Image 1 (cartoon, rainbow, N blue to C red):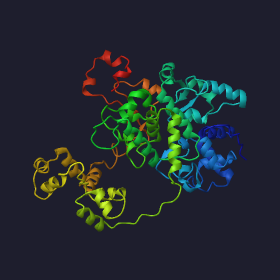
Image 2: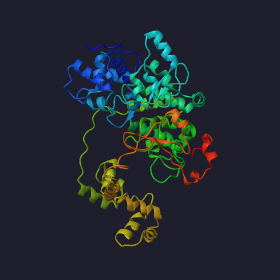
Image 3: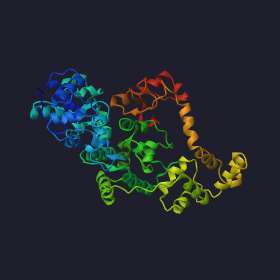
Image 4: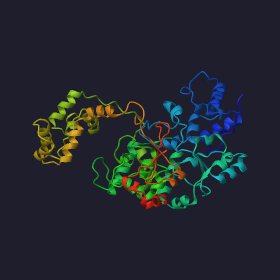
Length: 482
């Protein structure tokens, strides 16, 4: 027999799990999950087969798709995606999400409002964790306009909010004052709230096209490569502020002006998701006048493109035929695509993978001559660039692109097989307290699950290390963070 608490409006999944756990006297999370599986008669199955989320939805007597849409942060984290964008949140067609990502939090820690605690106790007899308070970048309660309280440990969800009051931190009043009236931050939070209540995501393909058009109209660089125009990432740092950005997309907090950041600038040109949904929401908040304008543009674009229907399989072009067309077109990707009666996108990635660069004459008509001089005639890079009347950098870039396969081999050789440096570094969002306690340049916290190292990697320059003790201990102002 298992006692089932009432699922409250907007209650987040992990908070409801904690309520089920407390009501049934379980001490550990693994214990209550086993109890739920035994109650449902699936204790012999793995959590891949029957996820914890599905067990919770059965306890709450709620359809799994409804539970996902109304009580998890998945609709926000998956609000703009290139991964099965046609599937609704919680769809049975992609069950992997139910056990792998559906119950993840949108930001580290657990946040709550003291006024909501009092209100919930008066209305429901208990307090609970609100999904709406867990949005990245949200520092105050949208209803009561007071600073949120939080615990940095996600284990806090397993207790009721009133039980951890004496263990919680509070977002400082100064943080709230500095962000409450920022129109860009407010637009970001409004877009977050709108994505949180949608049944299905927007496709990265459509969103990128909208952002690229808006960014181009404002003069931002909309392609990869050498920086020769203002960067979207620089504008976002200027308008949102590094401290607040550290709680949302931490790589921006450590970004140097003028350097392209693919996680942010890539939202304008990458065909698949360049980063988390936060990057796309930041771009929408900056490039559109209001969050309503941004959301209306997304909805119109989504409705205009018939993406819900399966595409016909494109015909496969043999490598030898592709190479032959490339030779006849003198290395032009667009002419190769025309010769094969296919799209530019269909040949671009394959030719790059074969180490065949784009020698399109629109930008550098002498690249072919320079390449022949270097590869066939054995001239130096500098002499070959002179022969083709191209820049040294352009020819060097072409030479690198021809080594697509060997570059991957050398990268694997360089990568340690085990230990430090063998895993991917994933910067995690900082809490307000961690941002306030950072010294030097903005700190970046890496996941403790992947690497054994300090929670903060303080990237100080040699010049900064020579500062006097008094300078090091003085508070850092916003303009000092570069």
